[in-house]
Length: 493
View 1 (cartoon, helix red, strand yellow):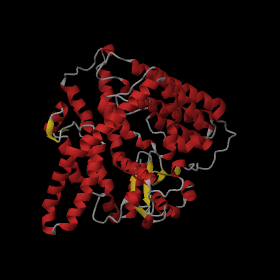
View 2 (cartoon, rainbow, N blue to C red):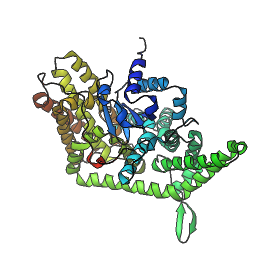
View 3 (cartoon, rainbow, N blue to C red):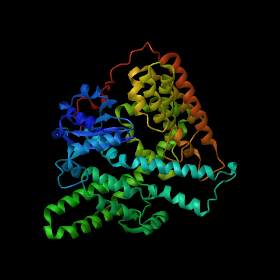
């Protein structure tokens, strides 16, 4: 089959966001183009929403988000190609950079602006590595499944095959600081290679050995400075990427040009690595682990109530694009304690929205809606709900609410059974993440996954079928996102 040409769509998107001169930076996640515009008022929201190939337009987290769906990577490549090599170099942290992406909306001040910017930085740093982490999580879950005694232990954990495939899966998590550092540096327009080297310092075998044993480096004034194990870590590396950018930028301005090639990376790596290992790393990692453990404990303790509330409302975060702020928290939970009760509840919300749009696809006699609904359902069952939410569910509203009702039922069961996830990937495709690799005989979480998924599918499907949708309903225009109350009176970063 000939490859689809996205050039026309790319040109339309560029024109409707205000032209090339209005684009300060661009990233993409699993389903969205995330623009940082110099002036959001110059964008033609309604024209974009009416464009074939565009599902919706969202303004959140200081970003102008164009929801594309599963073809987002192809559209992103086409947009970058249309913008030309100078813009591509800018995305890669090249010398043609013209401004700070996170500060493209220049006049904003105050604490809310910093929250928006922080969310933007986390999103920009984590988005490129999400797919790799999800794939690695699926591999680890399947390996755990193949070693279950109940299935006859089809794979020996000491076999060469197991250890080799396990290494393939573990590498994404083990070297996560390198991946996050590289990604964060590209987003912040720093030097990705220098930042990746700093991530390599954090994952150096001897540092890991010391960190595992909590060996004290030295003491000053009664305070012990310790090595920590930074494999699986995220937040220390994002801050290290910012330090590296700032220090590297200062050196380039102040060092003679003939010294920069050697001394810029030399000084940056030494200073930022030492600062991260001795000061910022222990503080941030300790705080992140504490927050992650506290939320895990809170979700466990609240049981069915926590599951009901989180399950019922989580997908609303997706509407505002704020769900990406939860991703690093889940990763932190899994890296710290090896489990995430929060992610177990979130998994059911994806299934629910998929079941709701599936009911529409089966019940409707409109061929175009059927095609869109089936594609969106498959996407949701694979862990990506935006095509379902923006393509169908929100545009009928009752369908989205039907999905929330199913999510609440799913979360109730997960919380009641104290279900856990031990991997990153959720929804139906993430079934293997519910097997505990440390205790293969304990299947409570997997049973919780089965029951909660059945509840999510049955409740969402039936509520949609009998209440949420019929062919006499008129699909609304692509949904205008209601203003986030927390952002009233602010200018997006």
